[in-house]
Length: 113
Image (cartoon, rainbow, N blue to C red):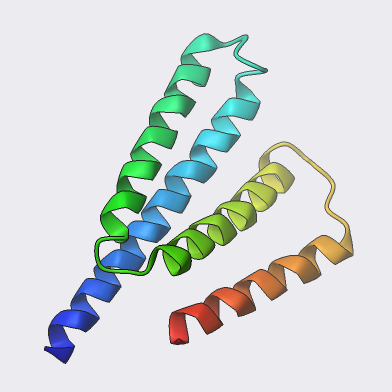
């Protein structure tokens, strides 16, 4: 029984990470679309958001909603912030990096509980 729970939790965690990755890609494409001036990028972004929610819905079958949503949101914030910094030269202050470190610590604590 413990083995089954561990495998489901690992699959759920993988689905949360996949949902967050799709969400980050959607956010970056939305920025690249220029407010839907490039409509195909905007619509592709919306499709990715739909897939992200689908993956999240699969994850919550075997993971508490509060934990899955907190992890999905945190991964999304981290990925979108870093993606904007790397790909769009958006400025991040040192306190932003400190906040990201706190988010990662919080996610680790959530995963351990």
